[in-house]
Length: 334
Image 1 (cartoon, rainbow, N blue to C red):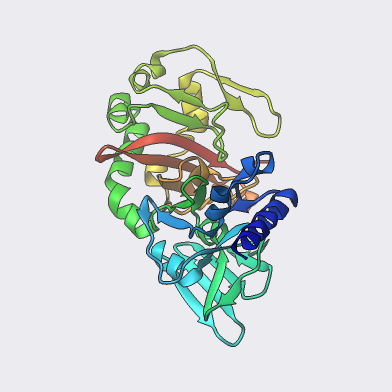
Image 2 (cartoon, rainbow, N blue to C red):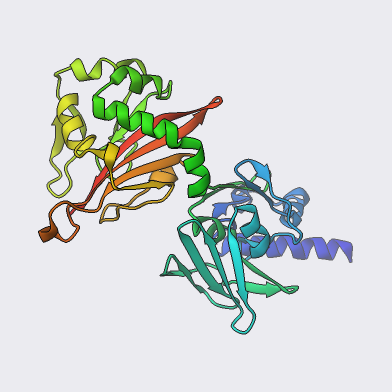
């Protein structure tokens, strides 16, 4: 009988693999089993309980995560508490609402449809009630609150990277951010270099951070770049696609300090203010960063806010210090 049970489990896993792959948290798991002979050890891994970590710290959950249709399902209340989100539950409609900072998500047990910041989202696996708890797919639980998820198939560990909530981010970074924006205003490049990462600073002309084309200036070159009259490629202009060929001074005027951001009327700490057609992927590129946005909602009333501008400063922890790693200019794009 024991041998029959093992064979049945092997056949079951083989069926999952042959029907489009076996995934956990939307990452491949045991993909090699599709081509190799499945061993008893490979089968036994399917009964592991996924480990959930938030910003590197293991999350202790009263109710264990489980797999459903190749997705990691997590108890919403436990994960919400672990990422610093507030949960409300409507027993009559079996609907949960989660809020963290500027983000809000809503999902209903048994439904594939959920809402993220007011926009409908289709879940791969519907939320469901189990032992009196509502469970939802792990990826949505984190990404709906502004986080990112990575999956380690060998350890069955899902790592959630969550940005700090605005109040905590402001407490940590306000003084440093103010010093950086003041250095930019005064064109004090030595002061800017002192506040920057030893790995350099990435310059993004628009809200979408393009790691393939954005220029990165090394820590040492930050003080000498303004003296260099050479025109460099910084990316491409939105709309025309023409190359952005400018020396540093020209780039500074157009894509760094295009307005007096040191006295911007709105400042957001890990909150995106300016929104346009360009995708804002800053927290995907810098999942553990604090992003400070200096924002002008517009300048000329006839443009009804389409002439808005933002300067985003990106900070990451380096040793025991928070340092500047990215400068992003954003504006209305066509």
